[in-house]
Image 1 (spheres, one colour):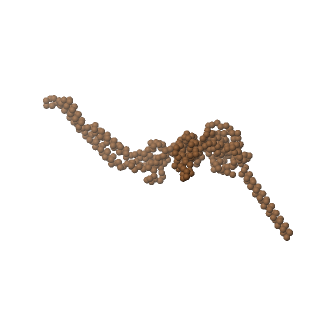
Image 2: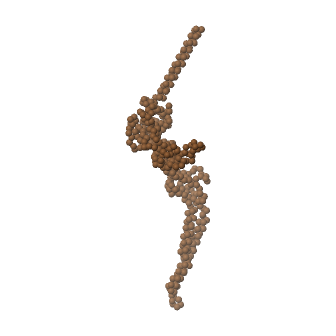
Image 3: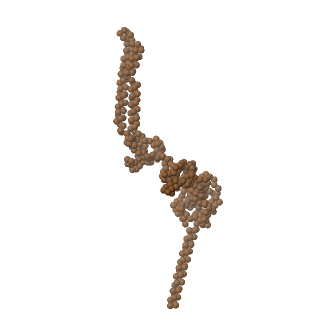
Length: 405
């Protein structure tokens, strides 16, 4: 029994030792993993240097790109039957271009009658002119022929008779009737053909599926603007004429814009709902500085600076590629390459980051940009561990991890 108890005791000791050793190894590994996760500190030279844009007072506006002008052309039965389209889908046209022509065949009978009327009046005029000419010729002979007494008619008598002949054949009146008949004919012919023209420069879009109720074509202006909304908290903070930094959501491209309109009344969809729980929103319109970076329907985000303070970043964060300027940013643990435009403003060097540059558009307050990013980093990749220098950006010098830790 003593031996058996000794054996059991030894086994218990061994088991406890094994468990203890396993726990020590597990805790050690966990510590290493934690150390790896916390390795992106300002003391880690392998972490990528990052810079957080200083917070500035801004109003953010979301909206979409709209054409300045748009017109749909539906079938108009009163004008007749539309002919073949004289433009193609996607074709760019200028103001005054003929898009298609209506033919009103219901006027054909009236046009035939008008033509017949013109011909009849012209025939009457020709007969009257011939008859008058003949009578005037007879009168001329009479004026030079003495009567039985040898006397010639007086000049006054000849003049009076000539005037009477001309009155009997009113060629001037017939000419007026012919002119009126011809005008009526031209008007009818013009009404038979109605040209539909572009009222502005734009691009033609022809629906692929055509029914009697669909538009024959749609013309969209080549000039665009941004239609957005701003909440009641911010509508009083912005004004017409202010410049906005615009970012296209899908492409990441950037440009500048100017507020051109702010509605006085709230939008219907933004008015307070049941119980007044919703805040009102107001329509805002912005111009676009570079129409080549947008397309109608694109969603955009605009940031309006409310102070003269500019967004600045380290010069080494700027990437130039294909004539465009970019930065690599951290977006919730994922890399995103953003196009930016720099401002021609002299900026003082930063004690930690060195040369700094001013950004006109493309970035917002609190954006985090990578400084001297590795060339193999691409948009969509997981953000590597980041570290900031000194008290840069928002003043937080602690370690950052783009993986969201």
